[in-house]
Amino acid sequence: MDALITAGDRREDLTARLPELAREARRLIIDMAAGPTGCHIGGSLSVIDLLLAVFAKFGSGPPHAVVLSKGHSAAALYAALHVHGVIAENPAETYGRSGSLFTGHPNHKLPGIPFATGSLGHGIPYAAGWALAQRLKGTGGLGIAVGGDGELQEGLVWETAQIVQAKGIANFIYIVDVNGGQNDGLLEEISPVPRLRERFEAFGFHVRELDGHDYGEILHAVEPPPDRPLAVLARTVKGKGVRAIEGNPDAHYAKIPEKTAEKWKRSLS
Image (tube, rainbow, N blue to C red; front, side):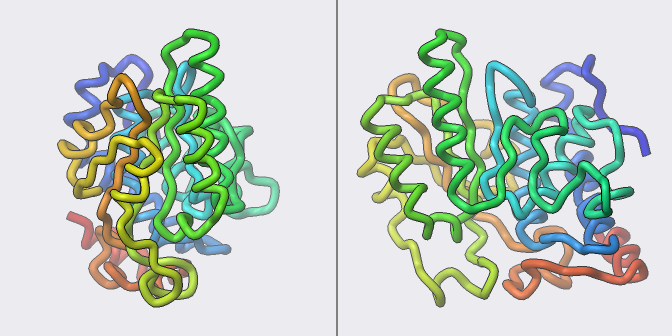
């Protein structure tokens, strides 16, 4: 399968095509879940719309850096970069296989991936450090971290927020995929993180809350304010697009039969 977008396409054309790109990206994620290793399908399906919109708005390379901190959702990152034309190879064909660059967590050897991530919490300081470096160099570049609400249980997230505040890193955007689930179940039943708006505001962030599957809302919300960092709290549905697993925390990771994959792909709207 050829990539759907080429480098010559205009950014506004990409934006108009986001629903089409999302359907194709979800098909790829399902195919990866049907591969020999399976994948983290629930969180990949919840975050894919955010990644597609961010790449449409900011691109996938310098001066900006988009860092997927919830690295277990690498299937979504690979799918987004493929349909945007950044990665030519179909990731579903070799995902998780021995010798493949499409590893279970983001591989920085692939184009469009500035940092390898995996241990939760680490991608946020990578993006913040990138933002600080771009500010010092005067490039106007942004550091954009895409994380998950379960990841907010990591202390490094809040240590980074403190540094962002202390160093005045206004060119930093932190997008949280708020799908309410994590590896072992529902966030609220394991270690809740309430009052997120107030928490980020206490660290000097401007906060916007939105529907993480509404492209218009996403594209409008990720416009950074000029004088402080931005936290985007995006409400999403784990497993979005596949009714059989939508909202099910048990769909965190799955290896599915090919017949199931074909059924799920046909059901995508």
